[in-house]
Length: 67
Image 1 (cartoon, rainbow, N blue to C red):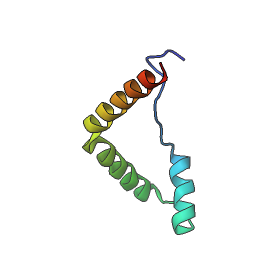
Image 2 (image 1 turned 90 degrees about the vertical axis):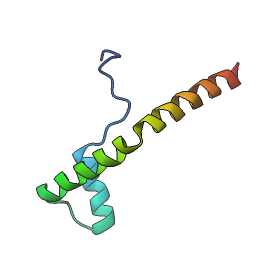
Image 3 (image 1 turned 30 degrees about the vertical axis):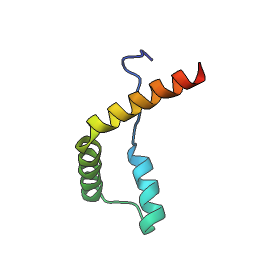
Image 4 (image 1 turned 180 degrees about the horizontal axis):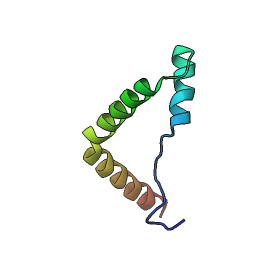
């Protein structure tokens, strides 16, 4: 896979369904999955700039600590 196409993080429908089965003991309906998708998108996009900045700064810090 091309580096430009490689995913850093991915959430599959099956992963969501497995989590639902753990939490509510059943799989989600299509409507519920749509709602979960919207909630996850909102949550991840709300502070994505802070997440990126922190992750990059931490990676640089860790790399410099190892040298």
